[in-house]
Length: 225
Image (tube, rainbow, N blue to C red; front, side, top):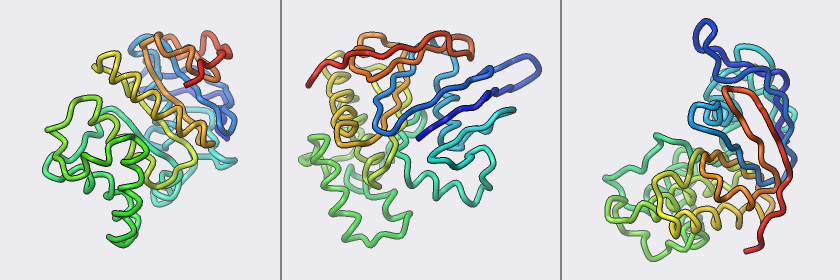
């Protein structure tokens, strides 16, 4: 489903976010990108979404070379993706339901259809009772699960989650990972970056990055539940 072929990203002379990355991710995998802060995990995720372009090499999603897509074609790619990226916060002046509806409204859905699908997405992350609440009244873990609901409301083929458990306590972090695992169990490909190694045994496969390079990759034995 996803393939990187000799991908490098150079931000300035001799300053690389990624160096000669080659890897493949199959349909339905639950991948954890591990490694310290600054290893290149966020840049790799943004490459898949076309937010960042490689300095060299190519990134393929479903056989399509994302690195060559014109700007006008990127929204069509992103409709197949559920993005949970750092810095993409919830709109604090709109309630939870309106936040989750937003991607559908932007895509041209009717308000009635968007509301129905948004409520279903909230049910899937166990937040149906928070639909009318404002984001700032929720806990950090609840806000992150709202972000997951917003990411999956378009029924994506791929979920990209950048440090989704950052700054959460263990209980809320477990709920976020459990929600993502539920979508992967339903056939969605999930790629999660994290520097927190406590969740690595949940993955189908772990890809370890350091200083922009893949330094290790191994299959895990996911824990059920």
